Image (cartoon, rainbow, N blue to C red; front, side, top):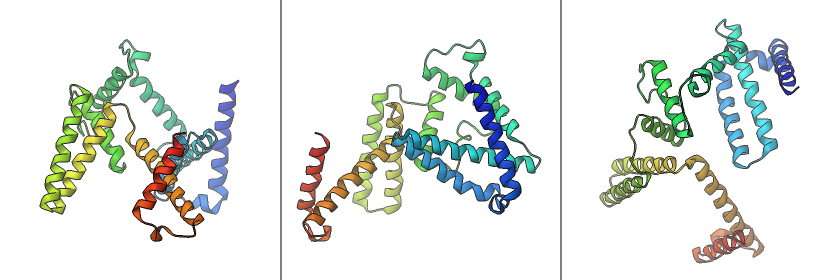
Length: 261
């Protein structure tokens, strides 16, 4: 029953897209280029909903992204390049090819083995035309890109033998940042800061932590605590500019203690 309902919903969405493209002035004007930024925005909105564990929000944002998939497929069909059926069959073929432990006779008993097989098959498919790291999208945000670069390099065996060893690299990069701080060389300091970030992102990867998600959690935590300081200052009839750093720190720690109760 669920499969039948899904098929009906997909047909309905395709029909809605056909009508909007034919009758709506805004939809008629859209191109791959004009939709690109909207797609990126929708992806981040989905990421926010996932971070917040907002199931209703996740459902809504998935619908928005699905609309974009259908919209791009419609544009592709109009250009005579591809259609929705090609897109769906293409990803099915890719999934079957990259899961030989399900559809073939390859054995993979752990998620790590599956990931290694996945990367190896991707390289074989591309026949190494672009190299191991060539498949990392240029447009990815730097933190996500660094994580994917580390993953792809690790799939070839280029990784720390023991995950604990990554902390030596973090300490090494931090020491190099200290050197450039003393030298007051902005260009070199920028390079070393980047190296430090890259090492920390690899540490996240090795310990199974999503660095983007971890940083966003810290962002939200900082915002909560800072807003508490602002609200308490307002209650006292003062602004943050009127307060000393010691007073603000006291309120910060006050809220921290409330969070841990």
